[in-house]
Length: 483
Image 1 (cartoon, rainbow, N blue to C red):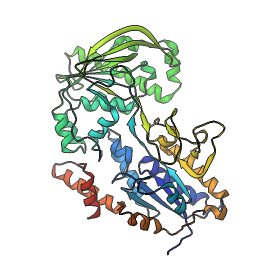
Image 2 (image 1 turned 90 degrees about the horizontal axis):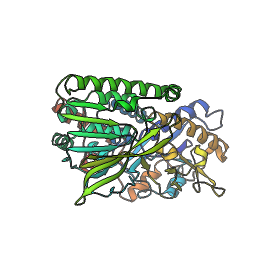
Image 3 (image 1 turned 90 degrees about the vertical axis):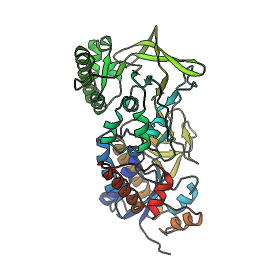
Image 4 (image 1 turned 135 degrees about the horizontal axis):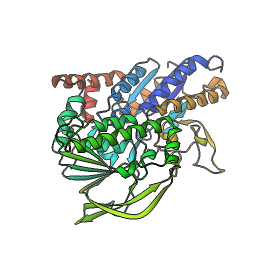
């Protein structure tokens, strides 16, 4: 037995939230550990249910986001740290239980993401041709257990949502397959699917106004540069009153988004004036309509399939309050995609706050509680949540960094108050977890194993003059990693 005296932390989820938290924990411990009586050494074991790390960065963001490569490379540098041990292909609750972790770790941090859509909840949402964004994203991102084929035979398509996921979905549905392949790591099945996509007209419906959308400027700029696509807007949507303009000006990101949307309005006018062209002045063969103040109320069907979408016009006040007008319009579409939010994953043995859609934690400070809220909610020692697991499906990848700092501060504070300088796990043998998993026939994929998968993806990409080409079959990932 090789018992050690370092702090031992288990992190569940190797996406941005889990990796950032691991890095920040080690940095903060190095700075504050002596002062808190904790020492400066810790071993962090990072458990991930998928065969590869990076979660949302690899499987939740559209492949044509240029910044994603940089984020993935930063996360990889963090994982290449001797104090962080990666355990991919190990599922919490199935391969290892909460009690088994608490026996071996001084604290357990949940950084689990989200894989389910919030239900659409409109009449007709069960028709054939209505899709949640999460499943479509899984398809085009090559999620290991996702669909391998996607029905892209609708010529007219609706996308519902006023956030970045809606923008990603709409953009991929309007994408030129060859352009996408040249610039991204999409696998062959996604290239073939998008190449055969019949969509010629897309309607993006946003319930609130121009100043209340939740798009990032980067998303808008990516929408502006779609080859063969004409952007079409409604002039009336941009008639903002003084109060709304003043309110939007108070927040820097909102102000920048609104400015970019006004730039798109001008661009759309130019595209029309030039004879229905794309952003480069070439003839456009696809039309992308952006509808603000438009709340879908029903998906209309025929023979069990989507035929149209019924939309009610709304108005939005400066404070973001939406009012329905009773004016309706129907648009012929054969497919409807809804991107109205994700539902973060539950974790076996941890209470879930259904109303706010995250793991139950005390006042948002990341300390896990026995129940969602109310007087009976007690803090459960040594258990924490960060990222979407803590706050629900809001915020960009950058938000996870500020989250991680808050949670790590709380963890260190709690550990410093615990007996034995925070070293409370009974089993302190770092190899104990390996023996436990081996006894169950579980073969984790470590950082070296991930690097083998990555090297193969790069080699496959190089054959086609691309930087990277994703492996999507989990069995192939395992074979590469364990070779």
